[in-house]
Length: 305
Image (cartoon, rainbow, N blue to C red; front, side):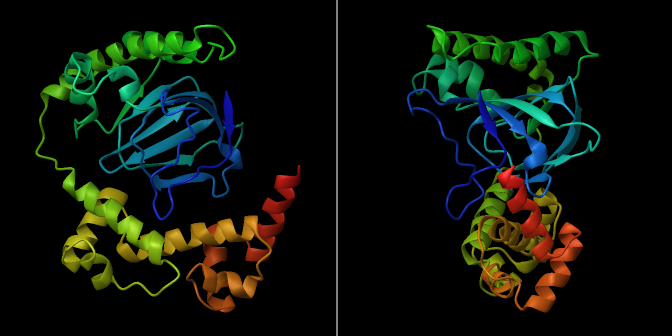
């Protein structure tokens, strides 16, 4: 099982880069040690892959555009394909460890346009009302499904037939997810994915231009929205104003620069779009609770241990 302590993203995007061993078998079993994530949260991002997880210990909170759910130890969940989401650590008393099955829907669907894809995969992954499913052990039907999700991690990659066995296990889990989702699938809200698509495009624009001055009219214009529509879209999907998102992303990049390089603090502020050392130091302390230099020492020392 792959151990992860940070996420990698596609260049100029917040679509997660997933290191499948081979494109022919798009699946990863991962153990996320969330306490090592630098900001103690995972920023807004998305991926085509299904994110199926079990909380081994600790407690985290998932946010999607239209739902918030808390997952203590012993619970499980599923984040749907291409859904914007972020997570926050909620437990500070024990290690926060999450086990994840990450897989492209085509792993279960087989050939494009197959009966399995049409009947079982597409209806669920394209349902806008199903952003995230929360599974709790106090519900008998969900408890059995949680056991199946956790049990699939016990399969060993070293065993002959592993790929067939893990696909079989995930297929059985998927059937149960479809059954649990049946009532939700009957609900057909007039919720459009176009807003989320516009937000993703604006996120990409920020990621490509964060070192420059970005005005709200400029950001709105890149996706042909008015300023008012831009504010509404980001507020509805990310629960942030455009200015807050731009600032948040610049601070994330500041953390990366401080932890991964020896760039002088005076230059780091400009490199992440936050300007001179005085302003950079002020907003960074508000965000991280320490100075940029203290942050660098903490994380560079952490990487050595």
